[in-house]
Length: 227
Ligand SMILES: C[S@@+](CC[C@H](N)C(=O)[O-])C[C@H]1O[C@@H](n2cnc3c(N)ncnc32)[C@H](O)[C@@H]1O
Image 1: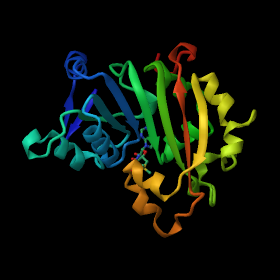
Image 2: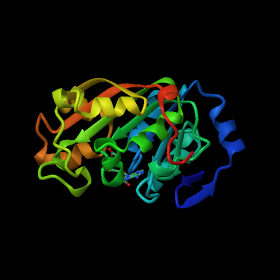
Image 3: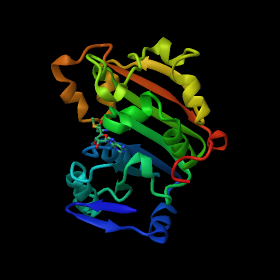
Image 4: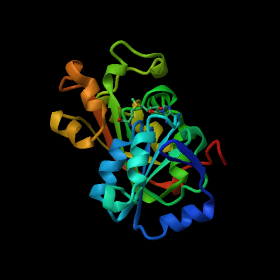
């Protein structure tokens, strides 16, 4: 897999990744990590976890990746790892993931999460350990007005997400069991450590971010596109 370390992109082989992974009880995967600040904050709060930030574009994460790679005495965070890859082509080395985060997705990642793209969700599920937790936060301004990626999908609400014709059944077919859907308040948004807190800025309102939480069962997930 392609590891981003500051300005450099390094080919991290399967054996090297396995060595990195071995000391940690948990593997948290942040898909569409952007500038990676959520990963850094998670990694500092959870030293027992390896936290991997993955994004289709490498540039936004370079600065945070450089900070993480510094020596621990200089503020480095050895349990944070940054990877350049699209969710549609997950690195095969990522297995036994115990927690998946997707915060404020846009582009094809947003499309995958909300239309939803079941093969992509299935491929993520196939990379997970049994009962992996997931947290997806949707910036509902993507529907106000709707961006092209959401297609015909109406703006989800806590009720519609759980309804029989909502996201829940499609997620379930991919092995993602939706357990709760709630609007986040300011404190909930701030707790995510996403840079999008600031960017939501003046357009932020109390019904602007929908958090979907649940668990992923890899055994129910049919084969994904990368299989
Ligand atoms: C709005 S930003 C959110 C960044 C970060 N999660 C946060 O909350 O600060 C959306 C991110 O999704 C990434 N993204 C879009 N499509 C993707 C895909 N197919 N695979 C992986 N990342 C993707 C973009 O490159 C971008 O960094």
